[in-house]
Image (cartoon, rainbow, N blue to C red; front, top):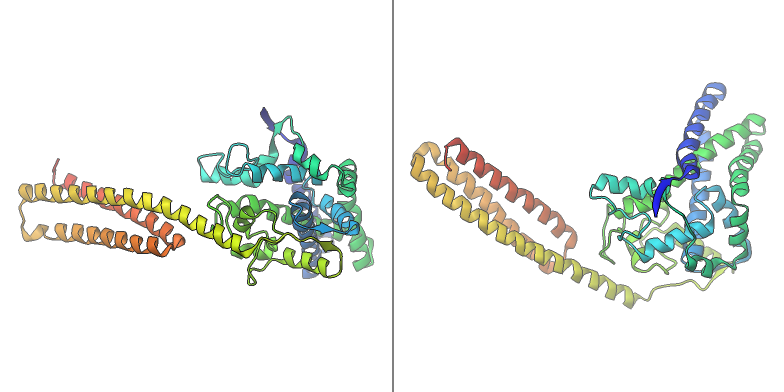
Length: 395
């Protein structure tokens, strides 16, 4: 299997946004700009976001609830307008992501490259621009969705729907609001920009939410990114989602803002959704404890290695200082040298004691930061010691 540039994806992700920016310049010069136009962008952004999150993701990819046919048809039309591919293809890629998370078979694994930056770019857009050839729909997607009428109809008419939702619908919205034909142009431009922004908001779930945030439920790369809620409407609770992918909620706690969860609950209240999948609290608690134990084992191993490294540096510094004293004497001029070493080594000892305390308290977030700081401190001690020895010509 080899990878080539996906021309369709390139035009959707790169060419079309450039064209829209050009149209924005033309619109601003011809019709001017006022803050009210941003309303079109916000409307398109959140409209498409709901269709992608509630429809593509939770309804079809994970089947975390069942919905009335009318809901499915509406979501299928709007999802086509998001230009993220047919429902069947989207779900197929998503099945692979969950089945092979953080492995070479994960279509947008952030671990594909050693460089974090390269991995970030790949997981954000690279995996779509350079898709495997030949590309195929996974069998599990066909088994689960192959008899779903809205899904298969959307697959057959995808590009016609995509054009209709990105040209005709925004034009009608602009015409209705502005009551002029120039309003139709305004709708196309600013709703198009909203769609572009929404696309990249979706892409951040694969990139940002696999690089930054907390991992309380599963030790993989998926993370909970609390501050992403206003863009992602609940998809930012990504670590929980990877631990319990069938749950209709991503934010399971009462204070977790998850707009998509509330929308699904609203549909249930009016009889348009049912059979909402919900993970038992006992299972969540058990999974959380298992994850803490996994991290604790990793940190204990790393802490042991750091203690060994710290002892080596202590011994090396002591031997070096002894040699230094024999070479240059212990005059008052050089009394600052042992004080400098003493302070640095004392800090490293305190850091080790602090790490042990954090390990016992299972505070994995602080422990991870402290381990990183200690590694930097040990490196600093080593380099500083070597410089002083070189200054005094001590081998």
